Image 1: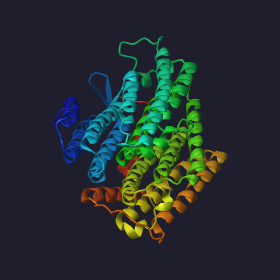
Image 2 (image 1 turned 135 degrees about the horizontal axis):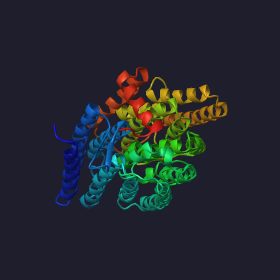
Image 3 (image 1 turned 90 degrees about the vertical axis):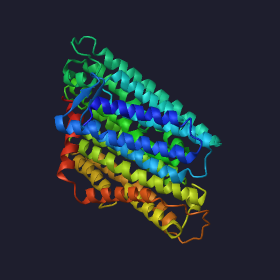
Image 4 (image 1 turned 120 degrees about the vertical axis):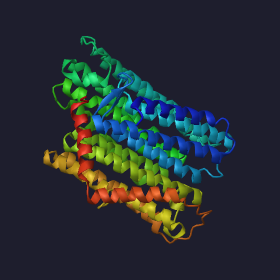
Length: 491
């Protein structure tokens, strides 16, 4: 078995080779194959560090620059699976709607974006983490641009502007974290999450709380948390569907992942006062309220999914803010949301291409015209609004139960009210789209790739099975990842 460092270098080389080879490609079909091969290579090569982790436990590599623990493994698998699935979907989506020049730029940026997200998750250095997040912003901004589409250009600039402000706030927070380390003496490098976790009690609690406000607001902007969410509906609605899928399914999670790294450090430095958790509860409930207000008035199906992302990021933030079982539920919810949102974007993208519009009032009788995609879209949306017995219902139920058991009845009522408002609004719109028998002209129904269909069916199966039965091994893994968010990294 190859070493962890070797697998990391090979992964970087595969991405470099993939990006370089795009310059030589002349056909869009060949460029898509390169994306497929690099994403598959990243998925396969991640097996080696993950195998080493399960064999030896958490560890650092390349000195102390990168770290792998339960939380990192959780997100690495999620990123690589979603990117590979999106690469499979891409071959049918882009057929005939882009030029080779446009797609060459897109494919090079796509692979760079994938690599930078992995850097964010693996990073152990707080400065390098900030740089990697900023790199994902710069690279992914140009993925939003659709060919000859002025609205996508406007969405790109809005995304770049708002997220850059957020990253600026996160930079201030990172500097404040560094400032709190001035009086801490150690032989090892101090600007790492592993050091911060083991020396949290030595840090200045006032500075750490102030720093976390900037951290939560800054990286929360990239995660789409309200009130810094304003870029998300525009970017999701204008970006190509595969980009919307990875934005919603993994990029938002990666930004929250950084907050998860800082949360136990700040909490421990303040003597477990839970003030940092209260900040996340505030941002989470603001996101949920914004979603409950804006989802009912949406007519664009992709903007609807965008506000749905804001809702679920808010739910995850609430779970983190509750602590205890809430953190376990938040991680479980991350997986459930990522898989169901991936399916929703894949199927809605195909529906949009077939109907030639994103207006839900003009998309009717989807189940009749496109039975397979219509059914997949309907099921994915039912999952997203929390219909039992799918797993997303149970992750939301765990968060509700945690609120009730902790006696937070006002939060419980508000949470339930917002979920109900979103449930009713989305259900009405989706049923009108899918089940309506009103005649509607469809340009083409498109081809359903076998591998794409397998991915969709597997994802739906996972969401159903884990809703009915959560394997003990999966529970133990999520519990270990949740413990890291509670107590920090322990090597």
